[in-house]
Image (cartoon, rainbow, N blue to C red; front, side, top):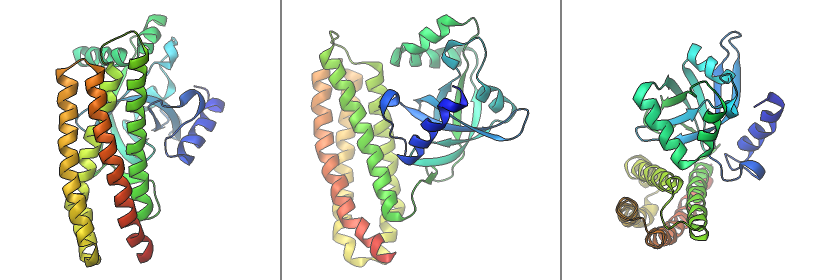
Length: 283
């Protein structure tokens, strides 16, 4: 995308922590900052991405099917260390260009989730590269884009609310179409949400909650309740995983999503009500 098109997208992405409007509403975007192959200067580009397991995300150098690889691809080949902004987090990553069967398998998954990738490949004779971005962040998802602990809680929670809205939107799309099977994009959305939520709750249970209990002993009853809710939500998440892998019935998935959504929304609201005031008072 040309630079004059990129700048408003970058500005909106940063201002709204990844939540976009208009053409990019609901799209999975990240901001990728690479080092210029010839200039050595940083360049930031909005790119679509495909979530993946193993602490990596995948970006596809489609350039909308043009005859040339995009500049950001040439940059990361020359300088593989890049900066990734997800909206909620910023982190350093190592870019690895996938080859052979692995590239083909990942690209096929991308096409299953969004046929637009196949349309781009049909427009060009070049093999569109697929790049894995491996996070270099230690002990977490990166630096959270917030200025206080209280704000950080809200930022992360809002990211999960956004993921849930994507899941519900995909389910609604499935219900309104003629298909009776689950879409690949729905599986991507659900599994991404489940993995992120598990990591978040594990971090709270092992690091954040013990710190709060030490600094604010009166918060112990609330922390106990939150831990218990983590266990209940983990059960719902696992049931959703099982439903996704064992059925093609959108109605069954919709039931599990509604159960999880109701429980999680109540949990997030309660956690914000109990914990954010503690951090605001300390500040």
